[in-house]
Length: 225
Image 1 (cartoon, rainbow, N blue to C red):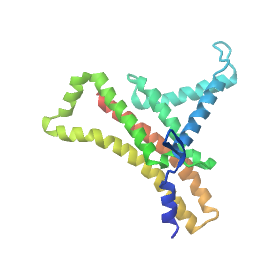
Image 2 (cartoon, helix red, strand yellow):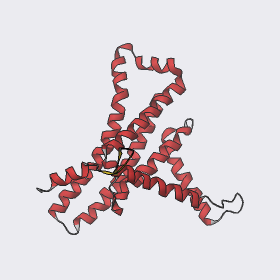
Image 3 (cartoon, one colour):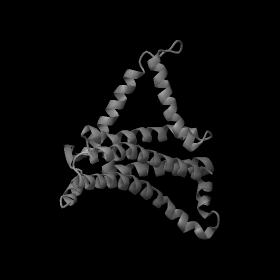
Image 4 (cartoon, helix red, strand yellow):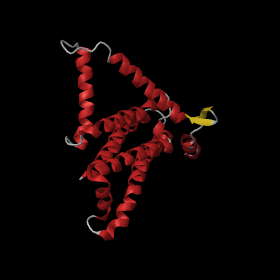
């Protein structure tokens, strides 16, 4: 139990792997690049020789997976604003893989607060853009006075609270799962951690990815209503 504090600090530290032009590149960035490279290579290989007529089983399976993933985003955001579904699907895939990559010996990027903060900022920019695009700039400004003008400061504060909520919820749950796993390892080092790892490393990681995407989609729907 006494080693939990140092281990937790070690997990929170994001050391620079190398530098480019004096700019330090952290481990979370390198792992993200690896995820991007793998998906880019997979996309190139899997989309070669696609057929419009008489597609093979592999193409049909690929189309089913893509349609299913796209359907998750469209189901959250709705049919009318399904143009935002591609972003939601992309974030869902990235977070799902990022939370599971620890099983391969890599440090999950979502354990870096900078990563979760960056994702939250991307999402909040899209949320506010959706509101401006739907209502116009004047209508977007006017929405801060709804339902009555007295709540304007609260509505403005909410713009800053949303990304903080998205960021800390994702980071806190991933970090909390790590703490619980370490406590379980201290209680019973053999056997029990394997069982709980199936939950915290797999199920919980995928759930947190979906929750982040679901809340982003929910905020977008609120912004355009």
